[in-house]
Amino acid sequence: MDVVEMLDITEGCAAPQKVLLFSQAEALKAFCADFLSRDKITAWVLERLHPAGAYCSACKNKITDATTLNNFYSLRRCRCKSCNAWFSALKGTALHHAGLDVSDIFLIAVFSEMKIEAKIIADVLKCHADTVKMWQAKFRAVEDGK
Ligand SMILES: [Zn+2]
Image 1 (cartoon, rainbow, N blue to C red):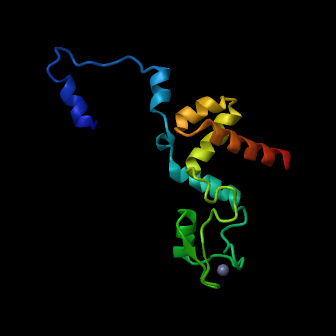
Image 2: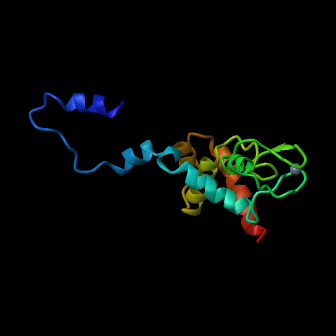
Image 3: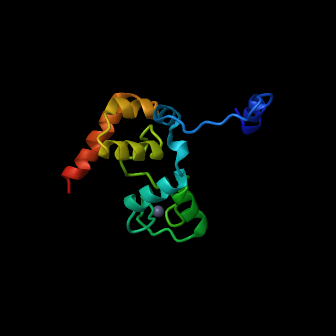
Protein backbone atom coordinates (compact mmCIF):
# COMPACT_ATOMS: atom_id res chain seq x y z
CA MET A 1 0.00 0.00 0.00
CA ASP A 2 1.48 3.38 -0.85
CA VAL A 3 1.29 6.54 1.21
CA VAL A 4 -1.50 8.13 -0.85
CA GLU A 5 -3.76 5.09 -0.37
CA MET A 6 -3.12 5.18 3.36
CA LEU A 7 -4.12 8.86 3.43
CA ASP A 8 -7.36 8.02 1.59
CA ILE A 9 -8.37 5.62 4.35
CA THR A 10 -8.12 8.30 7.01
CA GLU A 11 -10.22 10.71 4.91
CA GLY A 12 -13.78 10.99 6.14
CA CYS A 13 -12.84 10.39 9.74
CA ALA A 14 -13.93 13.23 12.00
CA ALA A 15 -10.50 13.60 13.53
CA PRO A 16 -7.27 12.60 11.85
CA GLN A 17 -6.22 9.31 13.35
CA LYS A 18 -2.84 8.78 14.82
CA VAL A 19 -1.25 6.15 16.96
CA LEU A 20 0.94 6.90 19.95
CA LEU A 21 3.40 4.10 19.27
CA PHE A 22 3.66 0.91 17.23
CA SER A 23 4.11 -2.43 18.97
CA GLN A 24 7.37 -4.37 19.22
CA ALA A 25 5.62 -7.37 17.61
CA GLU A 26 4.51 -5.24 14.62
CA ALA A 27 8.03 -3.89 14.24
CA LEU A 28 9.53 -7.39 14.28
CA LYS A 29 6.91 -8.68 11.82
CA ALA A 30 7.71 -5.87 9.39
CA PHE A 31 11.48 -6.17 9.79
CA CYS A 32 13.73 -7.51 7.03
CA ALA A 33 17.11 -6.62 5.52
CA ASP A 34 15.39 -3.93 3.39
CA PHE A 35 15.04 -1.86 6.57
CA LEU A 36 18.83 -1.56 6.63
CA SER A 37 21.24 -0.14 4.11
CA ARG A 38 22.26 -3.09 1.94
CA ASP A 39 25.02 -0.92 0.48
CA LYS A 40 26.48 -0.31 3.90
CA ILE A 41 26.31 -4.01 4.82
CA THR A 42 27.89 -5.03 1.50
CA ALA A 43 30.67 -2.46 1.89
CA TRP A 44 31.39 -3.63 5.45
CA VAL A 45 31.36 -7.33 4.53
CA LEU A 46 33.65 -6.81 1.51
CA GLU A 47 36.08 -4.80 3.62
CA ARG A 48 36.27 -7.77 6.01
CA LEU A 49 36.63 -10.34 3.21
CA HIS A 50 39.22 -8.30 1.29
CA PRO A 51 41.28 -6.38 3.86
CA ALA A 52 44.10 -5.89 1.33
CA GLY A 53 41.76 -4.56 -1.38
CA ALA A 54 40.40 -6.02 -4.61
CA TYR A 55 42.37 -8.74 -6.37
CA CYS A 56 41.62 -11.11 -9.26
CA SER A 57 40.76 -14.51 -7.75
CA ALA A 58 42.59 -16.30 -10.61
CA CYS A 59 45.90 -14.45 -11.24
CA LYS A 60 45.97 -12.45 -7.98
CA ASN A 61 46.59 -9.20 -9.85
CA LYS A 62 45.41 -6.08 -8.04
CA ILE A 63 42.33 -4.51 -9.61
CA THR A 64 43.02 -0.90 -10.45
CA ASP A 65 40.55 0.22 -13.13
CA ALA A 66 37.49 2.09 -11.89
CA THR A 67 34.85 0.04 -13.76
CA THR A 68 36.09 -3.32 -12.50
CA LEU A 69 36.52 -1.94 -8.98
CA ASN A 70 32.98 -0.61 -9.09
CA ASN A 71 31.66 -4.00 -10.24
CA PHE A 72 33.72 -5.73 -7.55
CA TYR A 73 32.29 -3.65 -4.71
CA SER A 74 28.74 -3.88 -6.13
CA LEU A 75 29.02 -7.70 -6.14
CA ARG A 76 28.68 -7.75 -9.94
CA ARG A 77 30.74 -9.98 -12.20
CA CYS A 78 34.22 -8.66 -12.90
CA ARG A 79 36.58 -9.48 -15.74
CA CYS A 80 40.28 -9.37 -14.98
CA LYS A 81 42.20 -7.07 -17.33
CA SER A 82 45.35 -9.21 -16.94
CA CYS A 83 44.08 -12.81 -17.34
CA ASN A 84 40.49 -12.28 -18.62
CA ALA A 85 39.06 -14.49 -15.87
CA TRP A 86 35.52 -13.80 -14.65
CA PHE A 87 35.09 -13.52 -10.90
CA SER A 88 33.16 -11.71 -8.20
CA ALA A 89 34.14 -10.35 -4.80
CA LEU A 90 32.54 -13.40 -3.15
CA LYS A 91 34.49 -16.00 -5.13
CA GLY A 92 36.66 -18.11 -2.85
CA THR A 93 34.77 -16.99 0.28
CA ALA A 94 32.11 -18.76 2.37
CA LEU A 95 29.54 -16.37 0.90
CA HIS A 96 30.03 -17.57 -2.68
CA HIS A 97 26.86 -19.32 -3.96
CA ALA A 98 25.58 -19.11 -0.40
CA GLY A 99 21.93 -19.19 -1.46
CA LEU A 100 21.28 -16.28 0.90
CA ASP A 101 21.76 -12.59 0.40
CA VAL A 102 24.87 -11.02 1.97
CA SER A 103 22.55 -8.85 4.11
CA ASP A 104 20.70 -11.92 5.42
CA ILE A 105 23.97 -13.65 6.32
CA PHE A 106 25.10 -10.46 8.06
CA LEU A 107 21.83 -10.41 10.04
CA ILE A 108 22.26 -14.08 11.04
CA ALA A 109 25.64 -13.04 12.50
CA VAL A 110 24.20 -10.03 14.35
CA PHE A 111 21.13 -11.85 15.69
CA SER A 112 23.20 -14.88 16.72
CA GLU A 113 25.62 -12.62 18.58
CA MET A 114 22.54 -11.18 20.35
CA LYS A 115 21.75 -14.78 21.43
CA ILE A 116 18.47 -14.89 19.51
CA GLU A 117 17.23 -18.45 18.86
CA ALA A 118 17.82 -19.93 15.41
CA LYS A 119 14.08 -20.55 14.96
CA ILE A 120 13.23 -16.87 15.60
CA ILE A 121 16.02 -15.69 13.27
CA ALA A 122 14.69 -18.07 10.57
CA ASP A 123 11.17 -16.63 10.99
CA VAL A 124 12.41 -13.05 10.64
CA LEU A 125 14.58 -13.81 7.62
CA LYS A 126 11.98 -16.16 6.10
CA CYS A 127 14.43 -19.00 5.74
CA HIS A 128 14.78 -22.45 7.30
CA ALA A 129 16.08 -22.86 10.87
CA ASP A 130 18.60 -25.41 9.55
CA THR A 131 20.02 -22.73 7.24
CA VAL A 132 20.48 -20.41 10.23
CA LYS A 133 22.12 -23.22 12.24
CA MET A 134 24.46 -24.00 9.35
CA TRP A 135 25.62 -20.35 9.25
CA GLN A 136 25.96 -20.25 13.04
CA ALA A 137 28.28 -23.27 12.74
CA LYS A 138 30.33 -21.44 10.07
CA PHE A 139 30.60 -18.35 12.28
CA ARG A 140 31.61 -20.52 15.25
CA ALA A 141 34.34 -22.05 13.09
CA VAL A 142 35.64 -18.53 12.41
CA GLU A 143 35.68 -17.82 16.16
CA ASP A 144 37.42 -21.14 16.90
CA GLY A 145 39.98 -20.47 14.20
CA LYS A 146 41.17 -17.30 15.96
ZN1 LIG B 1 43.36 -12.21 -13.33
